[in-house]
Length: 621
Image (cartoon, rainbow, N blue to C red; front, top):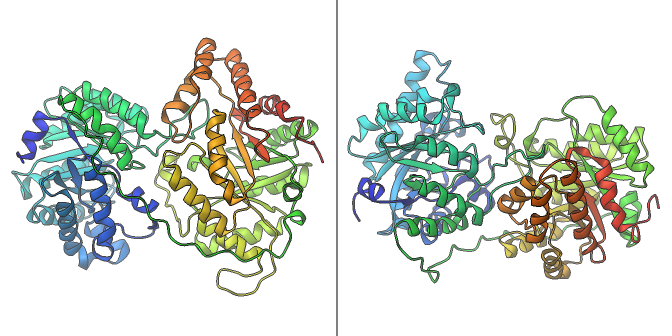
């Protein structure tokens, strides 16, 4: 293989994707030190590296992002830093073989350089030097400085890297916000100039934003004198028509890869939320720019293993006696709900008004999300309790694992039972970095499957410690993606959720009846009732974004063309409602219910959609 610097110059070059989010998908909780897995679970790390190499990655990063003494100290692993780094390099090198280069991943220390004292900065510099020195001595082909938010810390890290390995290329990537601004409001060109002045060989951005936003950043760095690298997130959503719900799928990732490479970007890869599938989708763009062909017969990424889930114990209270919704499900009746967003303050007056409009029209069940996309809103348990007490609606409480410890989740469930909130949607929850407070610490002691097991155990009168308790009476729902890119994994996940206690499936929004029909056929052996999610389109831009960037969501061409004709505004909302009605009409006889997610809590839109199911729905029954 030619030297990496030459490969980049003659590129483009394909970088791998996320390590952390993929490890989480494969069963490792966020509370673990992912770097330490190099020692305790080397086979898992090797499998991730191999999957990326098999997907076409030509540059793989070592699993050493947080392997500096300041970060490892939080896990009591400082004394193992050297072993973690050396093993990380060995695992990446073994997987790469003669097919890929190896870059030593280095992330920020956690020190707040903007306000840190001289001694704190000195300690951080020592931690970076120690990590980089070990990586260079272990034989990496490059040093990858990534996800730095502080320009001062990045400049320090570049200087250290040049001291420790003057002949080893340094690739430096900063984090930018959705407006394309970095630390202190600096723009892409200003950041690029400072990184180059500090000694970086390749400059760019990663994490923080998705491919559409990072495209603008990367293009702004092209032409400043050094090659440009871009690693956008797939898991980070953008705000669309007031809702921030969506991420970029692998196919759309490939589209932006071509745009970036044609604009002069030399190294392209993926960050949080990306998988080997995203890497493979970019492979075509990279090889096309090099005039090569893709061998579709090449090796595929390995299948993600699913842990065995033991059957849950039987609930003490029959489904029909647990709640109004449970009773309707037990009787086989069609169930209707409308999803409302909790207010971003403590004033529930508008929400109550919206609920009263729904109840007057016969919609007496609403579901309230738990900080969707890690947004800061009134606690949904308080919203649900107030609505249950002060209106005639029955709430469905979303419960996610993000913000509470194992102990806190158990207490939360007991609290919900005491408040009479017996309908639950169990979810894992979006990471805080997706929301307005990315510095908030996630918990994730359990995921949605683990949380379902806790709740179903309480229904059986047994707490997580195995001690008898007063049985709860929860109706337990879970989520699903009918159009998931990895349909087999989604179905296996549903099997785990049913085994853990799920009694109802609430899908992501579906527009193509054929997609839902196939999904319903595949999951029929599970015997779980399904409530289909319906999200009225708000504009043409909204429709294109959903179709192109939401994993598992497909909007038929005819619907997108109809939205293109009306653009935005009142006409677009009306057309969006009409399309939602058609989508619902196509599947209403195969599901046991529907929940509508009206943009901006527009209850009139929800009720207009629900007119389609009046023949199945018995309001107020």
